[in-house]
Image (cartoon, rainbow, N blue to C red; front, top):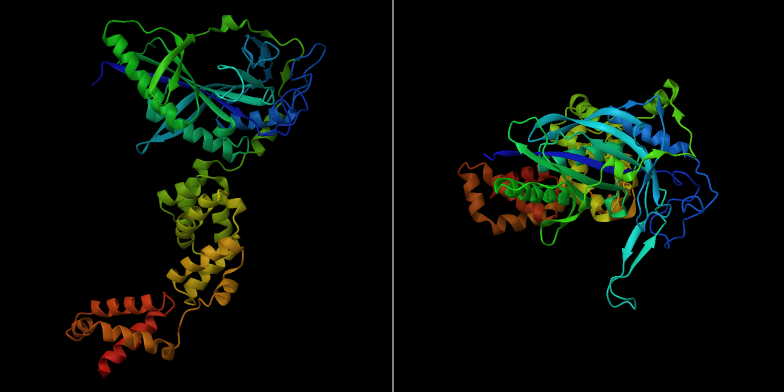
Length: 483
């Protein structure tokens, strides 16, 4: 057992799903030509004034409530001062001592156990721009960088956990749970590739069992949950090595090199006084009424954990099924739409988890954009239950439905996939199977009932699963009895 235990705190930046920026009317569109979506306000030109985006406040309050936070009765904005090329004003409008929300928590699941991680605060701020480093050989001097200000002023919430996360695995679980909730409530798409969700991690070591926090390092710009976990593992090992050799951990900001799987020093860690926070003079403080809070609360959908429990209780689904189906709200909505038409819940769950989710993943689609409408999937399940086609044939029908958007009966008719239930049509394949398998015939005659199942399977292969297996078994017994 190690003499030290890690303590982790996470700072997660989430871009809110608004049409425009936090303090101006510039549109938020990913992938636009650099510096196209800018204006004098977000570029901080002289004489301009910021105007707060009310929709951003609504979404931020919704996220804070979903994370069990207490909404502040009064919040204000502050200037966070620092100089960097991606910050055209040389300050960022953020929140310091009076944030939007405080004192929340998030339930996480690790190794089958639930644990509550405290959330210290949720505050609002504007985003900075993006530095683009030129690749060698493109007609620019080595080391040249460009700046794209399209992202400047995008509305963010920063969700700051308490230093209560016990290590890399819990950090990953926390991020998974946080992302799921934020997506569920429609606050953000959380697309890390587009920068809609970014994470910094603070990590320190302390003697095992001690209540005192050690000196922390901050790991910046971790662009996937996997890298957060790996970077924490590496940094914990590094700090343990420093302490075990009698050294002292220095408070600093570090980066993570995924190719080398190392962390490296970037700069000494700033404290709040380094940013020279002061109240934003161009924005008043904002009072929040109970009506504002209740309006935001009313906009919350059923949250993932509650929906998961309901799927188990109301539909009798196993915990695994319920977790898969509720991982995305669109998938859960789709499942419930199928069941509302009268489909069996477990059969619908099985088909969605295997066939639908596979094809959606291949097509890069969410369930709410599925080419197969919920009522069409319900029809397909009903057709199988009625015996019109076999379960095997349904797996051939579904991909055609997914490609064309057509209902199952139309696909079955057009592709001749109906169940063969005419004995005369089965005579030829049955005769072939009996001729090819004399040993199975003798086994059946000697009392081995499993042999008939084998022969049925051979006929089903020859008919590509379209034969009625009950009729096949009946005809086989009849033919063997006559032999």
